[in-house]
Amino acid sequence: MTEPKPIIIWFRKDFRLADHKALCEASRSGRPIIPVVVLDEVTETFGAAPKWRLAQAIEHFNDRLKAVGSRLILRRGTVADELLALAQETGAGDIWWTRAYDPDAIMRDTKVKSSLKEAGIGAESWPGHLLFEPWAVTTKQGGFFKVYSPMWRAVKDLDVAPPDPAPLRLMAPQKWPDSDRLSGWALDKSMDRGAKVLARHANVGESAAHARLANFLSGSIGAYKERRDYPAQNATSRLSENLAWGEIGPRTVWHAGLRAHLEGQRGAEHFLKELVWREFAYHLAFHTPEITHKNWRSEWDAFPWSDHEDEKVLRWKQGRTGVPLVDAAMREMYVTGHMHNRGRMIVGSYLTKHMLKHWRIGQKWFEECLIDWDPAANAMGWQWVAGSGPDAAPYFRIFNPETQAQKFDAEQTYIQRFVAERAPDPGPEALAFFDACPRAWGLSPDDPHPTPIVGLAEGRQRALAAYEAR
Image 1 (tube, helix red, strand yellow):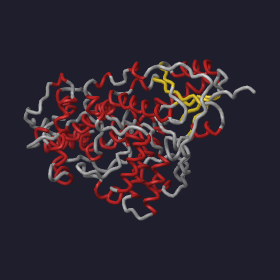
Image 2 (cartoon, rainbow, N blue to C red):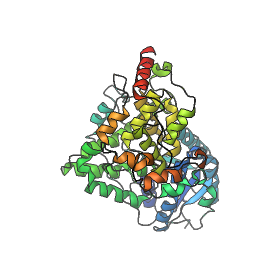
Image 3 (cartoon, rainbow, N blue to C red):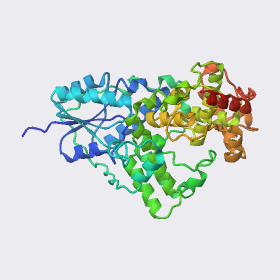
Image 4 (cartoon, rainbow, N blue to C red):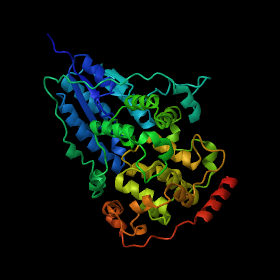
């Protein structure tokens, strides 16, 4: 008998075995499976922290594959060329992957599918990154949702298929193709000394993601709605990191949250709403791809944001604006690769309102620094806080970092955790910032905390005047 042709599974940001439709269907086919990651034209554009985190995801996933009799093949280059070459080397008849929905990925994937089909190779994309395909959820008029709340009401009672269990064994090909070495990709190069600091805080791999979910369900979910805005408290799931890299599937998280809701955990419904907020970001990125690079609301094109990166922008990036809560959030990101959601709103408002700098500056810096970087969520989040995006308030929203600190960090626990200059006895995370930041910045924990680069009252009045004049 002739051995059945292998199936190549092209992994991108879906580094898991369970809740992976393409992989599970391939394993049921009885055909050999060749898992592959390509460092392609889109992935090469990732920022420093996402590239470092990608390397961690690949390394852990390769170990996971080895446990079920498989391995990960690594290739670098234009993805259509690399996949075609790999199919020719292995005699593979099909190449499958999990769909992506941001515009850069869609453009890449469309070209790949066309090239493969022209070469007579089966090419199929599968669901798995989202709970609901963006074209499958519509308004009563048949259009796409432009406001979150109606979308939540439309999907909250829909059936979500249960996640597929992880395959116990994957059939290997008779001969494995050659693979690059992960170390040869040097994905940690841009991180320099900061990689060791981030490694203390990353929660990498499928097993760690499931443990993180279990810990959240057994602890913080009950008070999630009431406590999630307090950055010093361990009140959120922190699953954004693992969802961003596909180390846990959205159906897995949804069904776990739904069980908690049915069991009476009062914070569970709000947790499910946050999952749908993630869906909403991709819903918009798919239907209005311009959200990733220009104002979603065109009327904001006249707003006088500056895109010039001056000394004040550098101080914002360094967490040295002189506004304690802004600086704490920025340093949290530099030390941990993560930023509390309340912090994201506050630093975004300060940049775009008090400093009158374009939201694209902040979007790009987050893309450089976040290990939970997600193209759709990052774009929508920045536009939401800037006012140019969806679900914007009917008034000009300006967060006051002082009143926000009084409300959500009254004891300054979070501020002192990350800003050494504000702490009587700086802890390891505050000091770690100076180990992680570029040497060229020349920063020291002995430096005094600077005065604000823009006064809060002054900045607010200037922003309101600019809003009225637009």
